[in-house]
Image 1: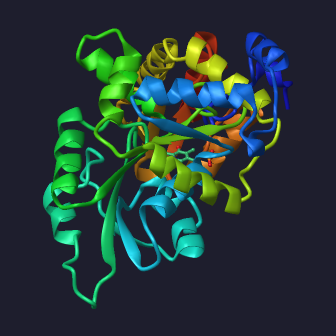
Image 2: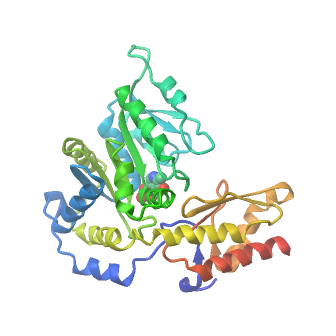
Image 3: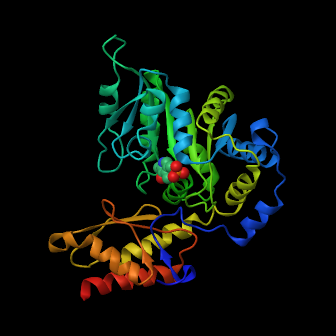
Length: 352
Ligand SMILES: *Cc1c(COP(=O)(O)O)cnc(C)c1O
């Protein structure tokens, strides 16, 4: 195996290393004890992300999973349910945490091909107030979902419907700034933060990851009303997420918000370059990416060769995952030359 610097790691945008400037910001951060509420760097980050997304308050949490858990358990009590997509992280990929820790039942729905949950399906899943049923309390959407941007008009319509029906609305915006970047490009706008705020304002709570495309080592934030965040704060403590000199991490997140939002467009361009480079390979169907995630499926006789392909790429210092589909994720530690190496290696595999 090659050393780290020559790896092209396309497994996820979580693999990024903090940049020298980010490490400097971390080392310079004033620290306190966040369980006492006196870590100035955590407090500053929470104020920054709340203001940026147009909410009263925010809570810094170690992971996106804990952020979603705090959100669902703050919106719902025992015997309540949340409507959510079959592929949504907070249903499928979080170990059933809301059910395990909160006795909150998910009501999963199938996604349409564009990643949306059809409005009629949402409406049909809302239970009447009757002793037979769990109480439907919450609609949880995810944007981006598997790298797909949900159409803004859809987000508005779905969250309007939920509001009309008396449901709370949560956004798993682990990659909200990727969504905002894609939305801004579509609308020919340049203010990514304003676009993120427009999406976020359709919801009562939003979770954002700093450790994905934003390039921080650890950390997510949950935003909402002051009263909602007070409830989430209690749940974070119960979940073991009260951290002490957490300003060290908050400073990295804050640096990411200041310096890594406007460069997400580069990752989207890299994903386009990768997808275009893979076009026309027999046995490989590539989905056109909206953001920084490229999915591809092996077709025909190649279908059985997924692990062989991953192993061959690994040998050449190119890392990707094939858990259910082939997935290549671009991020700030992958440059154009890395993308080209990945394309050449994949082409080589099919031409061999
Ligand atoms: C990564 C991710 C999470 C969870 O974040 P962790 O920090 O890995 O717990 C939640 N939702 C989505 C959509 C994600 O991509």
